[in-house]
Image (cartoon, rainbow, N blue to C red; front, side):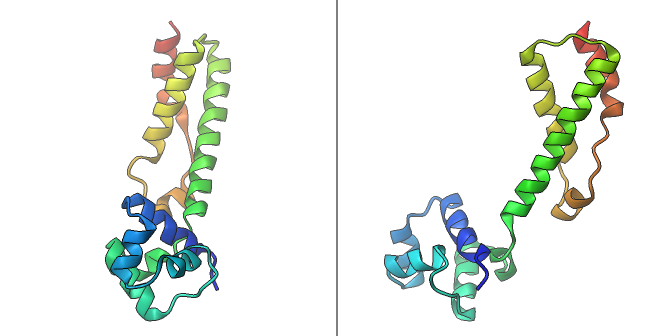
Length: 140
């Protein structure tokens, strides 16, 4: 059994702000059965998978997507933004306050990942060179 499915069930349920009791009722199963599905102690039948996909308004294959791998990719992008920004600040000999550095890191990260699909995120290479002018302006 793929342990990612139960984790996605719980995650999708929480995203929809559904209690276990509410979701179990919609599925026609007990809270205990739902809990076992979420924890990976029970396997999903095709019918139950389709039922969950309908409740969550997703495709059945979305129940299997590994959210942690996307989170890991996003963290890699964040790390690259931080490293490149620090190198740029040092190279340009710019002085930023901790607040400016933090805000800039978050904004540059957003600019890097905004609108990227999961597939594009996988192949994305961070290049902050185009933001040098902005960094110089902040430091002056």
